[in-house]
Structures are given as structure tokens and as C-alpha cells.
Length: 629
Image (tube, rainbow, N blue to C red; front, side, top):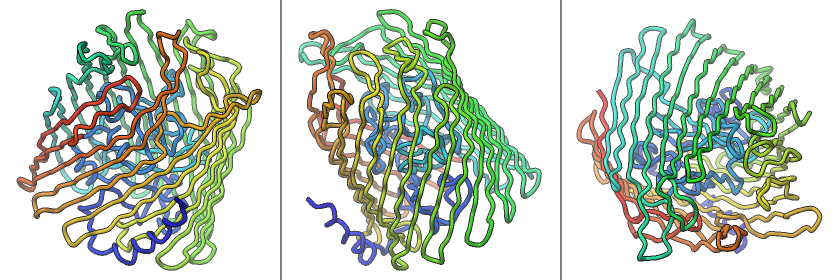
């Protein structure tokens, strides 16, 4: 099928389907007034050359039975492998086909990393969805503003930190579901004069299912459960209308049972993670200037208990960012900043005891308006890495309004990703001779913003090339020659009358990589990532108090690697079959302060695997109540 034939749907979506949408029916919107993630300072959405996808508070409320991985997996262009498996199964984020280490996870605009992990990636299982206000997804390379790791994009998790009313407020949620799953969440926040506070506590527990899949019907594996305790708190004080101080902390204690391998049960494997994220920020805003000084410390303590012993991993990550933006003229907005990062791994058994690196990065970006219809953005970042020397990244973006109803945008950017400390010095397959990974990314697309900002049909073509890609080959980390990804994303939203709203999502992904420069062996595959991903969401306002949402996805077949223990753990290419996944969510407003919800997943009881040799639940449910005081 020729991709260009999809273009007319953009115009049809605006001219025919754009009527009757309202905020209650929207699970993602474009924020018209500000896009904080885009450039760290507020800008008009109309002038932005890089569209931001917002998963709203309303969307999160209407996914009350889902965890963070499942919510992200439901967004366009994102595949979270493991999101539909056992709750304790590890979760791998693939944004536009790139592995998770190329996507930066932010909490309130600040990165959260684990230097002791394979790619330094934060574990989504340690981030409870309770008390999240919204999620911002910025696709495409964002390395000039958000650091070298943001080759594929940025996911910004915004917590409940907005206080619009004086006084104290509290509420919570409790739910029960399949596999003896219990989730509970309590929160309180308030404002008194210039002082504001928030606090949250959550507890999640499930008996789960067996993580590994039994390939013998006569053999039943034991269940692998999960439990998590989370706490968050924050205090803010406004010294004036222009100056504000904020302090926050988040803690998560996570534990899950795991199995030994594909098709292999284990009765004693257990995984533990303690995540502590603390920080402070000073924000300043006036008519001409906006800026901030922000600091965060992320401490991660992981431990894996297995039949082979205990394997502890401890990572420390510090991030300090100071930046300021100013409107130089009515047509030119300028931002300049300096970022400092410390990556440390506490392990005296590695080839270099307690290894660490630092990265110092000055950066600058300018948004230039060329008349009322054309905007250009230029960004530059200089990285000084303590182990890999200097590297410079740049970005070029432009957008143009072809008409009042149609915008075209294009982006080109470079990225730089150094090997993680685990890949360089860790206990499994470390290689201190690894080279940094470098990327080139391209994007072109079309947008048809609805006047209310709630209908946002979009067609995007993207391409990305990564040189010196790091992979795991012959039980050691090594630099592959390169990886090439390309694809297209289509999003449409329209209404059928005043009660029903539909959203259509489609992603096509293609890619390949070469094993080495010497033999140039080409692998025309991206493992665990489907070429075709199609979704339909229907939002039905049955009455003033009842809303019903239905989501249907078709995931195309994928390839995976199976490290066969019967063959010395040699890798074998296997096929994962395509599957369909149907969910239904209904919520009923009992009163202004109390509502109940029912969440039904995998209604067709589809039998599928996200990872070869690991199981997924059949039909399951979650029932709960939300309240506020």
C-alpha cells in the first residue's frame, strides 16, 4: 500500500468529522496555551514545530484499572512489551521502534535514570500510576534540550501538583480484580496563602499468573505475584508572583516473583527494587524572562535472588539543570541552559570498583517566527563526557501553516548515547571498549488542529539511523554497525453524533540492522516490534452519569530471539503470532464526589505471547471506587 494515499484522510477528518467533540470524550489533546515539555518554557502551541501528545487526567481516570505501562502501551507510536503480560514481568518501552534506553523518562520535567541498569533505563514498574496528573509524550530526537539519551523521544510524567483552590482536599481509590489483585490510593493536597502541599500513598498487590509459559499441558507452573508500596510528597512556597520554591520526594518499594527463563518455572526467584527520587527547584517567571534551577537525586537499589545466588545492583543519578528563556523580540524566543549529570554504580566487584561518569552540557535553542505562518527552531548542545570526550548535537525544526486549518512540520536532529556503566563494567557481558552511539533523525508530518484543541488528526513520517548501536552478541555487549528505522503514524478522531467519539490509530514500522562492519550481515527485523499496529477507541456517553469506553487493537506478527538452553543457549529466531486485544471500561458517577468503575481486559480471551516463552493473562477484570472529600 502506498503511504501517500492516507493524506486525504487528514482533510476528511477536519471537514467532516470535527464536530461534536468535547473534553470528556478526549483521552489525548493538544494544549493550546503551553507546552512545557517542548522547550522547558511556555510557548504557544500554534508556534510549536514539534507536536506533543498529552495523555490527560480524564484519560487516566478512564483507565483506572490500568498501570503506567498499560496506559503508555495504549498511546500511538509506543509499544511497551510486557505491559499485557504478568504484572511483575519487566516492561520494555519501544518508542517508534527504538529500544528503551533511547527514551528519556521525566518526572515533572526532570530525568529519572538507573545507572546500574543495562541501558540506564528507569524501571516503569517502580513508578505507580496513582497521583499522576497527566503524561506528555514528545516523539523524535530531543537531545539538544533533554540530553543525549533522548534519541527516540521524551515521556514526561506530571504528578498532581496544581492547586487551584484554597483549603485542603483529599480523596482516594480502592479496587479489586482478577488474580486477587488489590489496589489502594490515598492523597491529600492543599493551599494556604503562598504555601501549598501534596502527599500521596498507594499500595498495589496481586497473586498474578505464572510469568513463564508451560509448554506441557500436564505441567502447571506456580503463580508469580507482585506487590508495591509508594509514597510521594511535595511542598511549594511562592515568595512572590514571580518566584517559587518547590521541594519533592518520591519513594517506591517494589517486589515481584520471577521465573527462570522462557518455558522454565522457578519457585525461589524474586526481584526487589527500592526507588527514591528527591529534588528541589526554584522557578522564576516575569513578562520577559522565564527560568529555573532544578536538582534531582535518584537512588535505585535492586536485588535479584535466584537459585544461583543474590545479584545486587545499586545506581545513583544526579541531575542539575539551570536555564533561562527570554523574548528577545516579538518574533524571537531564546533559551540557554547548563546541565550537569552524575551517573554512578555502587559495585566493588566490577572491573573498575564503583564506576562513575559525569556529563556537563551547555545548550541553547531559539524559536523564530517568520511572519504569522512560519516558525523555525534551532537547537545546539555540547556534551563533555568524562570518559568519551566531547560531542555536539543539533536540531533543526520548521512548521508552516498551509492554510488556517492545515500545518506541515519537519524536523532533523542528531543524538549521542554513551554506553551505560553496566555495559562497560557490569558483571554480565561487560565490554570497556564500547563506543558511543550516534544518531540522525528525520520527521515530516501534517496536522489539522481542531479549534478547541480536542481534535488533532495527524500524519507523520519518520526515519532514524543509529551508528555503533550497542547490542548483546555472543554473550558480550558489542557495537553493531548500524540500525535503520522508518515508519508512519496516523491519528484520526471524529464523532458519530453527540454521544459517540472514535479515535483511529495506526503505526507502520520497518527497520533493519547490520551485525558488524566486517561481514555486513543484514538482519531485516526489529525484534518484538510489529510492523503493523492498528487501534480503534470508542467513547460513549450513555448518559450524564455513565461513560463507556471500548478499545480494540490488532498487533501484527513479530520476530523474537529464543536462547535455547537445549542448544547451549544459542540464539534462535522465532515468530510471535499476531493477536487482537479488546478492552472495555465503564465508570458511573454516583455523586459529585463518588464514582465507580469496571475495567474488563482481553474480552476475547486471546492467547498470545509478547515475549517468546512467557505467558499473558486471559480475560480479566478490575472493579473499584474513586472518591474525594
